[in-house]
Amino acid sequence: MRSVEEALDTILASAHLTGVERLPLDRCVGRVPATFTLTAAMDVPPFANSAMDGFALRAADAPGTLRLAGEVAAGDAELPEVTPRTTVRIMTGAPLPPGADAVVPLEEAEESDGQVRVPATRPGAHVREAGHDTRAGEAVELPRDPLTPAAVAVLASLGVAELEVRRRPRVAILSTGDELRSPGEQLRPGQIYDANSPALAAAVIEAGGEPVVLPRAPDAPAVVERLVREGVKRADLLVASGGVSVGRHDHVRDAIEHLGRLDFWRIAVQPGKPLAFGSVAERMVIGLPGNPVSALVTFELFGRPLLRAMLGLSGSGRPVLPVTLVDRLPKDRDRRAYLRVRVERGPDGPVARSAGGQQSSQLRSMADANALLIVPEGEEAGEPGRTYQALLLGAMG
Ligand code: AMP
Ligand code: MG
Image 1: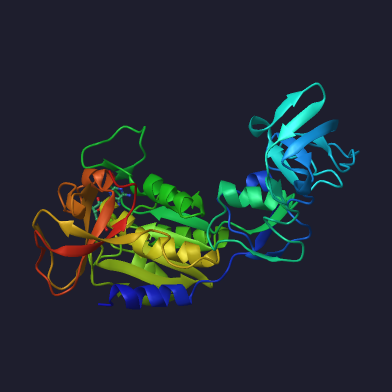
Image 2: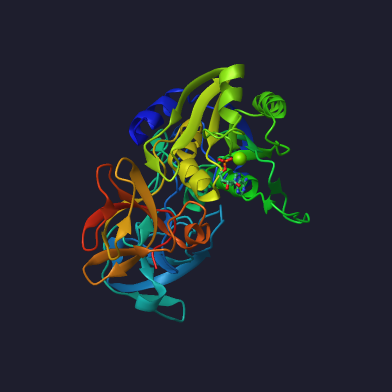
C-alpha cells in the first residue's frame, strides 16, 4: 500500500498543463491566468487627481482666503490653471489642475462670494499621484490562484480587455455498477441511485475542471473497457468510481491494466483504500472506490490537487489548521484517516466534533462536515483533547 504522499507524488508527476484560451475579462473570474506576471502598460491612475471633493490650490497659499477661479470635474480634459492666491473647485477623481499641488476637502473650507477660506495644508495633501497604485513598466504579479473579483479589477484598471487563461481540464466521469440508476428513474429491488456521477461532476467543477459525464457502465468488462476508451478520447483525464476492489465484479482496475498502464491500486488511506491510478492512451485514469464518501474524500485528496496542477496551481487550495478534537473517533491503525468533523471556534482555538457516522456508506455526515480531520497512520483513534490537523472544506461556524 502506498502512503498518501507517495500516491500524490506519482499522480502529480503525470500532470500536464492544459492549453490556453483567450476570454473577455468579464468571463475570467475563477479562471487561472496563463501567465501570472504582467508588465503594466500604463500608470494607474494615469494622472494625478483629487482624493476628495474640495478645492485645489497651492499649498504655499494656505492658510488664507483665495479667489475661486473655476471648477474641474472627473473626466474633464480642459483644466483651469491654479495661479497664486486662487483656487479651483475639484471633484473626487478629477485631474489636479496645473499649478495646484494640494486639495483642501470641502468640509474644511468656507466658501462665500467667490472667496474660499482654507486652513494650512501641505503639498500632496489629498492628491493621488499618477502611478500610485501601479507604475508603467512595473511587473504586476497576480496571485497564483483563480482570479478573484479584485484581480479582475486590477486587470481592468490596467486596460486589459481580454486575458489568456488555462483551459479547464476536461474530466470524463464514469460510474460503474449494475445496481445504479439515475435520480428520477424508478428503483427496482436491489437498486440504488447513482450518487457519484453528480457528486464527482460537482467536485470537478469546484476544483476548476469541466466534467464530461459518460453513460454509466454495468459490471461487464467489455462495456467498462469501451467506456474507458471513449472517456480518454473525450477528456484530459478519466475518473471512474466503483469496481476497483477485489470483488468478482470489479472491472475498472482490470480495464486500466488491459488498455494501458496501472501504476498502483491501493493507498493507505481511510476512507478509500482501493484507488487505482494509471494511464490509457496517454491520458490519466483514476479509479475511485464506489462508496460515495470514499469517492469524494479520495477525489479531494488526489483529484483536486491534480486538477490544480493541470491549471498551473499548487496544493489543494484548502486551508489546513490545527484543531482540538472533542470526541473519540476510532479508525484503522494502518491507514491515515480523514474523518468527517465540524470545526468551530472555541474559547482556546478551533475545536472539532464528529459530523456523524464515519462509515464510508454514511453520506450525510460528509455533507454535514466542514473539515476532514487527519489522524495519522499508527494510531487507533482520534483522541479527545488532542490536537490534529484539519483540512477545511467549508467555512468555520
Ligand atoms: P464498489 O467499489 O463497486 O465495490 O462499490 C462499493 C459500494 O459503493 C457498494 O455498496 C456500491 O453499491 C456503492 N456504490 C458504487 N458506486 C456508487 C455510485 N455511483 N453511487 C452510489 N453508490 C455507489
Ligand atoms: Mg460495484
